[in-house]
Length: 502
Ligand code: ADP
Image (cartoon, rainbow, N blue to C red):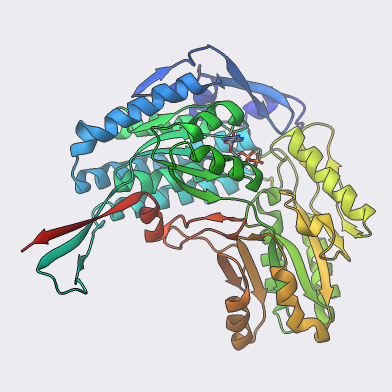
């Protein structure tokens, strides 16, 4: 199929997604669909061919301020503030049902907007989103404090109350647009907070479709607001706003630092899910076939635009050639094409900028002495495609091994039997600590190494380990806090201690 023409691609959208994409997009503030005050818009670009296919409002600080005011009103008084936990849980469950019911449409919008394969969007992003909404709906009715025995033995009855943190600003990236939004929205709503969501400028559409579903589910006005716009304007205004109680951010470590500085205006609570450079270690006793498929998905899933992507492969010399042979043939067999094509396994990267950045990193690795095993650069005549790429003979001092590439580029570092103890030290030699994986059939070693790796999520004989019930987050410069599981509820609540003189 030709990807030259937007009309060819748009023909792959179902009627519901077509109707949504073609409508005039607005901001969702206080239960109403409104234009940005200044009337500016942002182009939405199809990464499979570089053409503009939609426009969304370019919200700025004045729009953020309106949304924060609406979220504040909804938090302090009215239907949401007075709603029982059980009614809140039911609304959240209904939202999960609506995401599930509209899953094909959401997946198509995501595939068009981000470029990712539509089946990954359907069975990854969207399926995870409704699972998480349903899971978090259950927590709404289980947010308890504790009774505390006082050490002094004073005649007090003492207990804690767990209450919602308040108005939450949530800033999300483009790699899993809907899913990253839901990671933040679901626990915040379960806890009783109100929200201003700022999606990434590259992929704003599924957040707007989510707002329609929030409206359809029946959430009161002002509980959930969406302001599309640029990071430096709308995003920065949200992070700085002095009436926002908490800011939750997923994105680059560089922008994470800016969020932290901006949050200083009123010392709002901050949670950050930032970059990664996750190691995968393959020992000589690993099951090679299983390791190859887990490693390939570890690096190439979502074209490597995954914060947990396994980008550094530490390979024992005894199995290195066999593993690499498997990985190279796997990489070459992946079908490239536009995300909306059902056959596609590798879509384009999200933007021209991202494509250039990844190609520059590949060139820098080669210039520093890496050996190219497969891939190596851009693909096709239009769009932002980069081939699945494997660089052999890399080492920890190279930029490609230390810096986050956020593309389909695997760096291979071989180790000998004598270096085996040292390999965990090398794997930990990174400013990041989001995920890591180990491939071995020796269960003692697997658990021993899992305890030494400095990362928030560890896979043993698998790489991507993710579930609504499992806390997710980073060590070191990969972030602050844990999303999902009960820990996400903790991020969106405050504890109040109460003492009653008896
Ligand atoms: P990436 O590097 O993956 O594009 P970013 O960290 O730049 O990711 O962006 C993630 C999110 O942060 C996006 O929604 C973007 O608009 C927003 N953002 C970018 N710069 C800022 C900023 N200075 N303040 C607040 N938000 C920002």
